[in-house]
Image (cartoon, rainbow, N blue to C red):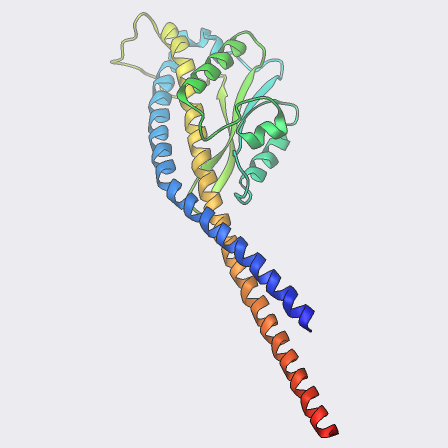
Length: 268
């Protein structure tokens, strides 16, 4: 019985240590959520503004000559996949990789340590992915698309719905599709619509990428907070259960000792 109580004490201390760790990680994630969501919202606004300009340009007939509006031909697909830099974020990374499995024939370009571990060389940090990184990547993607190295460009990321809900999604950003807007009356493009479109596309791709990355990072932080909250609650429940077992075992040991003492006294 003594061995049982000792094992239970060791187990309780171990789970209590884990509980302290999950609380600390939950607090860190909570402290990051506000900043991450603020940056995400600003990125959304910028991406929306750039997208509206591209939408205006693609409505022009002249812009259909752009290489970025080339029709899908040889079936080559490239997908930028954005995953986390760390684990302990619940199903955040698993949901991204589950969606990626639907596009096994695609060529993947990973962003984030976990994505690089699975898909090879890429950008090892999503959290610290900068505008300069985005500009370089966007320029490279636009050049290779224009050269015909791939015909379709998509991004797998995690959409931030709320602190409790994040959803893995794929967005196709190249080739550009003709906008439903039929008129750009009142808008003057210099030198012409086609030149402006070809010049603006790399910035458009950069804006969309940065938006996806910031949204994914906000989703990762929120997912980690929820995972740590859940782990903390489970750890506390486990401690309560183990403590009850320990008290019962200890009471049983005391009862046995008393019984032995009484039996010994009767024998005398």
